[in-house]
Figure 1 (tube, chains in turn blue, yellow):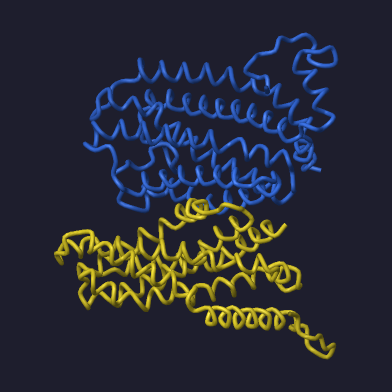
Figure 2 (figure 1 turned 90 degrees about the vertical axis):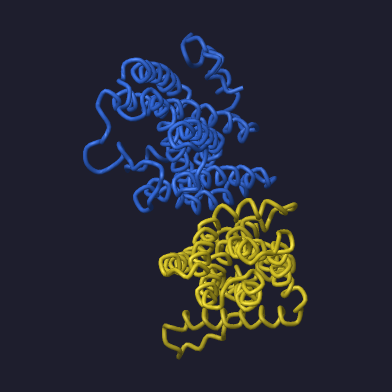
Length: 265
Length: 239
């Protein structure tokens, strides 16, 4: 009953079509929200009481870090769905996440290092938050390595699904590391119980950036998933009709111009 | 491997058959390992050599050695357990025993617990037995030994169970070499961190109970949850 929509998404041609229509609905809001968030954060937000103008890197650092966690959870969840219900589409979604996630993690670590140098006096410190975030990067890299080590796609899917599920324990460790341990990194100001401890004029651009990054992730992930599905199902019959539709053929799409970003080749 | 079913037996025969199968597996693995004691002792030898390299590579003043002792001991233990993981599944996968175990109708997770437990007895426990010698060469005071040994005992349990996941996942891969290390090491880092912390506190004479409790928690967590992952990984590798 309620699971009908889930199983509909399990059909590769359905997912391929729906993802193509969804991508612009994520891509444009991503662009606008990120622009708005950056303008709000870089221009309109007041300088911080203690850090001055330097705090503004939060508008890239915090959303990248949140997205690195969110991507891993999406990857682990879709891997679990693929493992349990044996859905090719779910495995394709899981396969499209790790490079995006690794990039977000690398951006979070790099911007964090750039922020730490003026504020903490050091680029790096082996405190729980930074160490577990670095571990997350290693987990993404080992996931990619494991996936590429198998020649058979189905075995690669299932083995890396087990790895993704085992590694998901790092995500709550990263989030709670600043609460459980005496960490140099600051405690959560937004994702916490109770009101955020950050000023509203600084908070709203940050939330805009967060939603913008999430939409960006969704757009990129859906595009990669479509490409992944094409690669996996390249011998299937529905591919021909789907590619006709992509090129704005008479069967579907009704003359809409095709954005090159949404094309799967 | 299943015991003969007597209809007169109570319904717990199924559980009895798992423990019987697990015990048979334990005996088999121990017997094979003791016959090939050279292979089994290699990780221990590696542990001794690697941990001894540190004082040889540095100016062997006791104070400096004490500083690096936790790191040397634990990195050596981690690398030795990584090396030992080859013994876990490779041979059994090649001669078909693992397939028979998967097919015999006994809960596979239980058999994985048995296999990993034996593997720990053969590769983790010897590290703990050799550790007093190495801790002495690294300048650790005698009073620190109980905590160091307890930390290694709990840590090697975690390392065996975490490593078993990696061994199961890379079982079906041809040139697995460093892939095993890449998969296992990120998961093993918390054990390394708390183990080294416990050792460092013990050498400094402070109470290491917090780190030891966490190591114990990790040992229990990995021992209970990883057999599922190991079983799933091995089944995938057997296809």
